[in-house]
Image 1 (cartoon, each protein chain N blue to C red):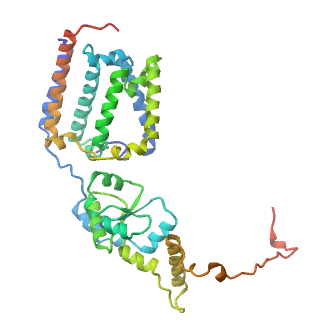
Image 2 (tube, one colour):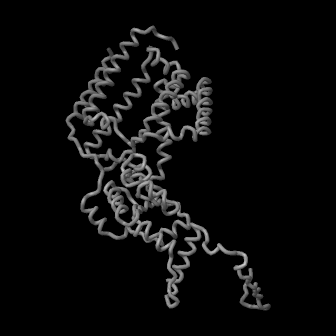
Length: 207
Length: 197
């Protein structure tokens, strides 16, 4: 047998014996308890239903809306565009792979805040980044967006704008509810007014 | 803690592809230097006249493993940050059978076939053409395989976790097994009639 081989085999085995004496370490990755507590007290993880709706309408590719309710409830009704990862399946490898996308904003929601917040804590402990909770869950989303309440006449302009946004978003998701009777007849014909530019306007500019 | 260099941000992530290219070039060089661009040499493993494939790959595995374990112990790198390929059980079994059959029939694996092309081997060119035909067929029929392809994902598991063993014990046993195999391979090579190539 070649002497060089014997030497190399000896080195390999002695390095292996060295490895045997290495201390065992805890390889479970999780955030420090103090950090977790600070994160739980920080309300910035809650996103409003209007914010999420706005991003859904604009088809934000970085938004990952996750329904943590059981599959039966998800198939009954959910927010359009959401995926269903029931909370008891969050720790499976394939779902972990999907949650482990750095560039996505993962937003959990359930019927209210309760289950989604649990899902958030599980994922936070595993060190996932960019995770949020939809405030109020699917119930609040339904009440604010689908059943938007028209503000009083005396309400400020912002409230009116918000209402119009919610109505438009609802139409975006579910189509118009006003189209029932006779859409052609109710459409009011608008007079087209052509604004003519005054001739000889000095401030008109040009190139 | 310095490594792993890219996840730690020592090297910006945009350098990923450049470094991959350099490492790939180094890998190709090592394959060619070990004689892997010859299909006859690779086939030696199946017929018992040349175990260079076994030697090179086990040496590489044992060297890398020992290096990672010591670097991690010294605190030079955080081994838990290394990316581990997810283990899809069904894909691994079926893909392993297909790959093994192609390996035994053609005398190349994908990496070595490109090495063979680089030095102008005609059989490597045919092999690579077949490889691309296989890729094409797989891509076209992907919807048929999709369910099986994605089934039983165990995530980034490690073999000693599956065996319920300590990491260090497994590493030691692997080194001993590698050295034992090198010795056994030399023994078989002496017994089997030498093939000229």
